[in-house]
Amino acid sequence: VSFFIAFALGMPIDEIVGSIQDGLGNTLGGIALVFGLGAILGKLIADAGGAQRIAMTLIDIFGEKRIQWAVLAAGFVLGIALFFEVGLVLLIPIVYQISKQTKISFLWLGLPMATALSVTHAFLPPHPGPTVIAQQFDANIGLVLLYGFIIAIPTVILAGPLFTVFARKFVPTAFEKEPSGSMASIGEAKQFKLEDTPGFAVSAFTALFPVILMGVATIVSLFEDTLGMEGNWFFDLIGVIGAPTTVMLLSVLLALYTMGIARNIPMKELMKSAESSIAAIGMMLLILGAGGSLKQVLLDGGVGDTVAEIFADSTMSPLILAWLIAALMRIAQGSATVSALATAGLVIPMMTGTDVNVELMVLATGAGSIIASHVNDTGFWIVKESFGLSMKETFGTWTVLETLISVFGLIFVLILSLFV
Image (cartoon, rainbow, N blue to C red):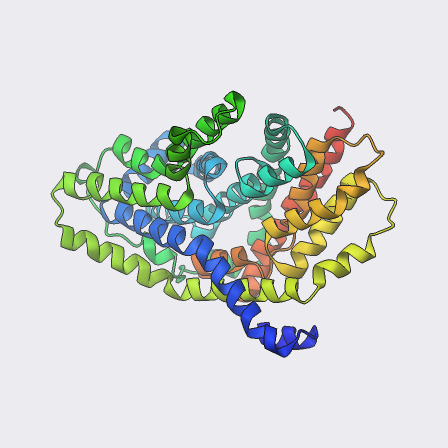
């Protein structure tokens, strides 16, 4: 498809292969290590019984009738600090275990969890999209985070548990079948007697360790900006430790100890868990790389420039215009972050002379950037493979869900604009 679209867009023949290679390399360069280490972390926690312990404790606290809300809350808390892909890898084994324990549909629990991760990715710093857009718009990060929370909470409730009720009526097959996706296999750990599993505290700490590290690094970086101490070796070191790849590596090393060595599990057995987790996501990494190639071809082929020309002389409200351009960019090239960044560059000149709230502009752009996830979005394939869905089922659940998040996000931004 990437080759075909490159020819259709009239790209020079000698540039097509390079564009495809750049797209694949940039995509896998950003996520392959994080995704692979995240898969190992999830598998280690699952194989040691840690995921089962977390699942059973959540069930005991919330009760089976409210377990969907427990999963939603867990996804929201984890999603604040984790990238969408990392959060999905960490939570899939836990959600899968809860599904098996309660005999509740895997997707019934998984969709609200994925919704929470997607909403935090679109609206809340320190995620790359809202953080960098806020810098470009010269918006106050603290206000973006505050307004983001106000918008995110009702959005995640409407697009998560409430939408799932309707989705099960319209796409019942997705909720009825036993998952066969590659990510689901990470959660297929053997069942333990509860007394044979690691304690809840150590299991939860191991699973949340990436969140803790990233959170600490974010707070320290805020102090660095406040104190004006850029270039200080201590802050540089914290920056390295807080990078997603380093965070996941340190988290895997911690899990090897807490879920393995401390419980006298042989290193050979731990390495088997690591190997099986990587084998499970191998095909998905190739699919994600191919999706990155398609995105790069669309960008290099001039799709973004065409969108800019269409809206060059528009007099529409800046909030709606930012949402609309981001939505079109998202549909055209797939990446939410690229859509948001490209939109920022297009709408900043259009904001001149208006009194629009720049923090709400950040959120409107973020809302538009996640609409209608489909085949050129890596998130589409991650969800499809994670839950073992067919293409039709993924469109009927995930694509509709992402569109609802986008539309609800815009509605709440417009409502909030009446008060701030």
